[in-house]
Length: 409
Image (tube, rainbow, N blue to C red):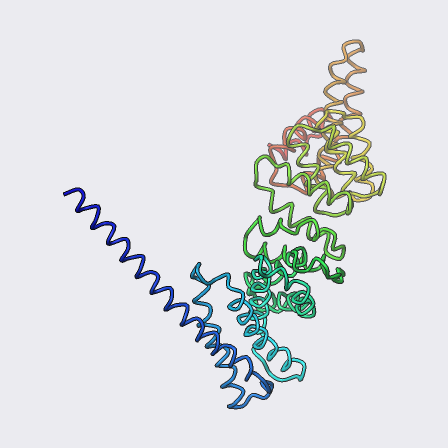
């Protein structure tokens, strides 16, 4: 019984193998016929610029052959055949040339279709070049394709203008990445637009909400100086929510290096360091900034605030007064300066090495200095009662300012 089963299995195997062989032969004969039809379509693909019945008929023949031959690429038995690959490339080129010729003659065309067909042609050429059989055609194909390469950038820009972000990314990615491929190893491209294309690719990545797409050409995008500040800002924002924030900090530092007076990079850099308990590192950047612009209000405010956080009140007072000299209506410096004088008044009252009369005199002098700053802060921030109320209460009480003291009750 076992021998019968084995014999039956062997017969099935031979039968299936024979059936597969017959099917392969049939498909091979069909491919031969389809290739001949395709060659005929390519030979007849002339005078296609004019949009008339005859040219439309010939273009349709190309399109029909393209669809027919594409089916063979799904079959491992045929996909790497040289004759199939070459005639498919000819079909794509003929169709793409129609768009180019009509564009050159200022005739109306479907621009999106032209962009997609050009991209398809280049991808197919790269795919063929990756095969061993395609390498012998490399020089010929690279020279043939090089004049069309710049159209990918134009196509990317066109797609962006129509908010086709994925199509735009594909064009720009192909424009930048293809020139790195072996197919174009002997071609010297003009790289003047590479950084611009990288910036556009980053913008597409942002619109597609893809950090990986943003990062692929990020270094080239940063080198596009007209939009470098915006690029660094986008990259910083993209990494902001990641933990650890190593890359976020990296782009803040890069932004500060190029644009120290930017209202974006400096405040966030200082906030990062202070919020992570690294006031000394924050101060290093503040001092660098002040070397560039000693009167910059943002830099002075940062130094004043960090000095306050370090409880270096003498230095903080100096910078606070400087800030208010230029702009007396800044809430935070007004509060801080008033608070420092308030602390000095409290300290004066505790100086037991002096007489009570002297202590009171010294304290009143400090309260008097505190008064205008905290009153201005109250005016600027009337709802922040928790901060100004207890200080004004002590000031009015110690300066015997009855009416004003009563107004707090």
